[in-house]
Image: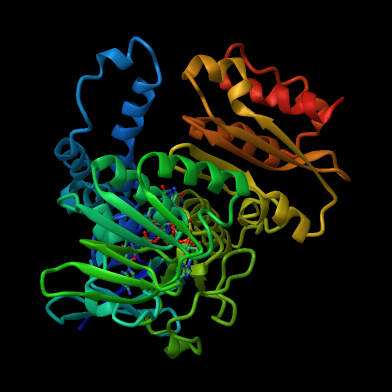
Length: 473
Ligand SMILES: Cc1cc2nc3c(=O)[nH]c(=O)nc-3n(C[C@H](O)[C@H](O)[C@H](O)COP(=O)(O)OP(=O)(O)OC[C@H]3O[C@@H](n4cnc5c(N)ncnc54)[C@H](O)[C@@H]3O)c2cc1C
Ligand SMILES: NC(=O)c1ccc[n+]([C@@H]2O[C@H](COP(=O)([O-])OP(=O)(O)OC[C@H]3O[C@@H](n4cnc5c(N)ncnc54)[C@H](O)[C@@H]3O)[C@@H](O)[C@H]2O)c1
């Protein structure tokens, strides 16, 4: 067995693992990364990038159809084959050569295979041929193994060869009928994408559509999906599934309805990739999410073990995982060099924004862009809040952006501190607007000062002024 020593070993070369390794190398330490599939992880090949590529062309087409002059120039429907082809290139044709070259240029050693912790600061890597290598870390091991789609225990589901988000994101053809179990982000985005690509889509949203967003978000997306011909069944629970000999899938709901489809996508959340990474060797439970302290050290794991990204369950989003990666990479370097650890609130070595300033864009029609707390979450956190609503379509810039612009904005204000703690925008092309709100929340900019941040006329950003005017001065 080969044995090698590095300062830091990272298990998992998704966006988070790559950034941890990059950060420690930039800090002057050596790093090895262990990957069992493709360097780049879920995000690059089966999640963020391919799904957004599936959605983007339909969004551009919708935008053109809402503008007289441009509308007349649209002479055909969405070209599904061209969309799938563009998606393929955004998934790098499921090859990781580009990312491997980047690792080389960044000075990060790559070990391909399944990584397992075998003892304190030691990781064994088993490659596809069964050969093993033993890696030891002088300073730290970082678990960045991500998450996988959760398959609920519905009778017959597993045997029916359901799609997970992976099969949806990498589909090589468009099913005539697609049923979706779940009502979260994946379900909402994939219903939007496949309906536009020509599938007849049914969504079984047991807990409603986008239930953790502001309620108007789910309502607007439901309305528009229905207008696009999608059957959105709120409260419907799948209780049995089977695939018949002809290949058709039959789903029975708790209310006794029967849905027939060609494929069924299951999108009911994620499970951590910790089943087979040797957690039992260091006294932790295999299969569990890895709880971490403020500097992303694994609770109960010894001072050498860290976890970042999806696997610690703080926030299951690429940008937030990469933010954690910067903190964890830097804190490992600081500890290795005996430098000061800045672990106070908003310090360099902690991921404070994970708590209350997480931005997210759901690329549905309309787009849902949010950051911070919803009104319900703020109330549950015990804050004394005021909710300010505004019709986004009434903003001059929005009416100019598209005829019949439909949208909504909600600002949640902490009345004791007079700062914004949450903002949600629903409307076409609102994705690029949300960063202003992230800055206001992270900077804890007082409302009094925000009056001096003047949005340009006539842009959709003028919603900021309208929200302040509605709040009052
Ligand atoms: C359909 C879908 C769409 C999404 N869209 C967005 C989006 O638009 N924006 C956004 O911010 N987030 C999005 N997400 C979430 C995003 O994909 C994840 O938050 C992100 O991929 C997490 O990165 P990670 O590095 O923690 O894990 P992953 O990307 O899952 O990477 C983990 C890596 O570790 C490897 N690995 C696991 N175990 C081992 C082991 N034992 N040994 C060696 N290697 C191992 C895996 O093969 C994988 O390459 C989406 C998720 C899904 C499912
Ligand atoms: N644009 C983006 O940022 C983006 C896009 C896709 C995914 N993601 C991330 O990926 C993660 C996974 O997405 P997801 O949609 O799988 O999870 P999710 O947590 O967003 O939604 C899962 C939904 O399934 C429902 N559910 C749970 N069990 C169920 C069951 N047995 N039957 C029916 N419904 C059930 C839940 O109530 C929930 O609404 C999310 O955390 C999200 O942050 C992000």
